[in-house]
Amino acid sequence: MADAERATKAANEAEGKRAVLEKNLADVETKISKAQEKYDKERNAAQEKALDTLRRRADRATIQFHPSQLAGSDYGNDASIGSSALASQLPRACDVFLSHAVKTRTRLLAH
Image (cartoon, rainbow, N blue to C red):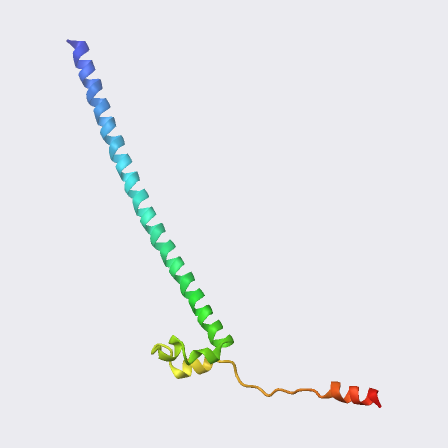
């Protein structure tokens, strides 16, 4: 009888330990799941931020290097880009000086 009681007691202790370990495992899995969700959320936010930055750079480059194409593009019809914002992104007009020194030099050397 004593052997049966010891075996029953050992089985109950083992069952208790198993239950504690299962609870610990469930807690760890919950923490992992929450950490994964947080990581995914942060990664998606970082990707969106990077994509927004790239889009803005591409838009600025388009405006800077191809301002004549704006009239026929979506930029002319986009209400989110106001005329003042558009004007501030366009390159400023500047005076151009063309040197006639080459012609003068050629003329002087020819005489």
